[in-house]
Image (cartoon, rainbow, N blue to C red; front, side, top):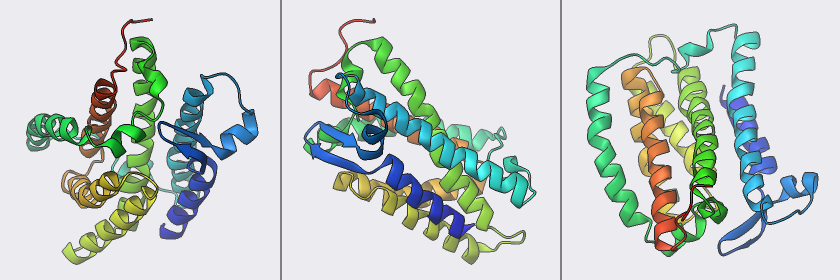
Length: 238
């Protein structure tokens, strides 16, 4: 499980996280532009739809195939079920205002503003913004399925004790933090802080989805607030 996770992550970095010409508010995905060239201004947005699609393929599709055809196990057992848990729902509802407040403050950091939203073109219209965020949802779902589902639950033994669970969460946190290398320093720190939190939540409630929704909400807020500080909020729907 660990070997396949590291391998998939390295392949993903090469085809979906390798940038060049990285300047303020603009960077190019190398493999995307090698495949499709350089088109009009919308290519800055298209490259991230490409990135999201690759994320779903490698972080969602490959683990599913490995689990079903090699491990011969039910993929839903890897934290993909959504059990109704009243306590978890209360925690999420309390967390949302905290998430909004913290992202509002962090979005004022120049490093965060330069990184998010990934494409400033989502400020062109609310329709573009919504379509982008919908695509972003699948990115985060695949991300959580891979790191907090496939990796975490895949390494967990049937009778796992506290020490084993803590060690697995540590492995997941190290990988997710390394995954953010190249991002703004505050984001790397956040990955190191929230890795154990989301890992614990996944094990505690036997589901990745509670942490995933909070993770997704954080990034929607970051995009929205960053556009606000850049004075790029959409002025029209279409």
